[in-house]
Amino acid sequence: MKTYIALLRGINVSGQKMIKMAALLEMFNTLNVKNAKTYIQSGNVVFQYKGSDLEILQKKIEKKIKETFGFDVPVILVPADSMEGVLKSNPFIKKKECDFDKLYFIFFNGTIDKKLLDKITEGNYGTDEFAVKGNIIYLHLPNNYGNTKLNNNFFENKLKITASARNLKTMNALKAMAEELQENN
Image 1: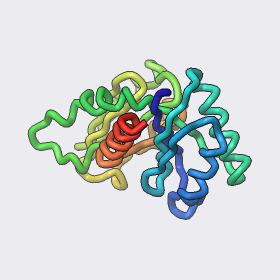
Image 2: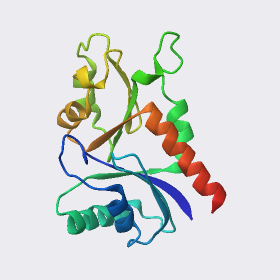
Image 3: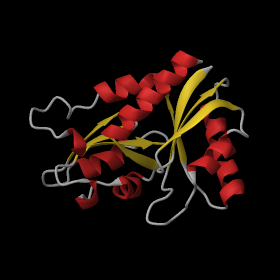
Image 4: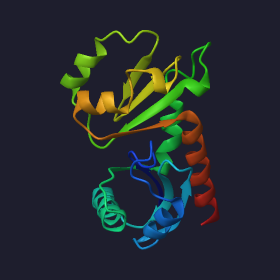
């Protein structure tokens, strides 16, 4: 059984798409997953799954959210065993003057179109920086996520693909939860 992290896009933000974590956990437990646990109110679920087709599982989770809560929520599944590599691949961690509280990760549900990416790479974003590795965009935002043009909506609109952002603290917590789940089960 492998461990995965589900990143739910856009729940419990500004009073929109409200889901209590206890209800989300209860919903997950009706699926064919084991040992599901949530982290903070922004829609992070760590769980174990025996199957191998993540696309089918992702669609099943999205469908169940729609049935249970009455609205669409995109879900991005991340294999827990990839988390260490994701964290170590962040090019901004190595910068001498980097404030770790200003680091973010945007995960994409699919492959990023290189032509669309090239168009935004040429832009001027002031002190805000981003780097792309695979289907993840790494962000260093010295003036905070709330004050940047380089947010989740920007990348979704420009790249025409579903995305979900998390900060470094959340990423480290999800990695720790996944490791604990793997050790105990």
